[in-house]
Image 1: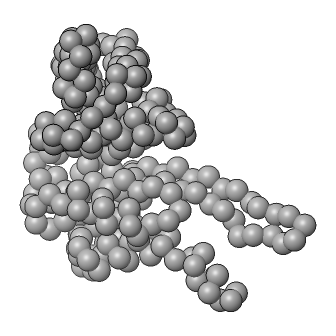
Image 2: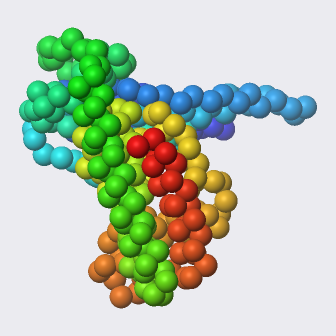
Length: 270
C-alpha cells in the first residue's frame, strides 16, 4: 500500500508532464518564463504527510513546423499535471523569428532570461541580444495598449446597451470581447507579446505573469462566481451558435460590474 501511495504522490509532476509533451509533440525546446510556487507542510498527531506543494508554470514550446497547436496542447497539459496549473504557448521557429524581426521582444526575453527545461539533441537556437527598451518602443507599446483598451471600452459600452434592452446573450458575448481585448492589451504592454488567444482562462493566466488583479477579479474561489465566469467563457461561441445558451439577468449584472472594474482599471493607465 505504501508503494502505491508513493507512486500516486509523485506521478504527473512537472517532469512527468515534460516527458509526456516531448514524447507526443517532439518539440525543439521548452522554456519556463514564469513560475508561482507555494509550499505547505502538513503534520499531525497521527503522522506527517509529504509536502503538499502547489506550483503553477508558464511555458513556451518551440516547434519545428508552422502549425499552431496551442488549444490541443493546453488540453493535453491540463490532463497530465496535478500540482497546479500550466499555461503553455506553442510557436513554430519561423513564426518566432518573424515576431522578433517585427520588433516584439517577448521571445527574445524568454530565450535570454527564461529557464530552458528541454532542448532537442543537437538543436541550437542562436540567442538574440536582448535590447533595451527605447523611447520609441515605449511609445509603440503605449499606443498599442491604448488602441486595445479603446476597443474594450467600445465592447463594454455595447454590452451595457444590450443589458438595457434585455438582450442578455448578446451582452455576454460583448462582455467576453471586452475582457479579451483588455487582457490582450495588458499582455502586449507588459510582455510585448502579440497575443491572439480567445480563451479567457488562458488570457487571465498570462496576466498573472505581471499582475494577479485581473485573474482574481473573476477567479475569486466562490463557486457562484465560478459558475457565472464559466458562462462568460462559453459565451464566445455558445451565445452566437447555440439555441440553448441562457444567462440570467442577475448573472449578467454581476459580470457587467466585474468587467467594468477591469476596463476602468486598464483605462487609468492610458
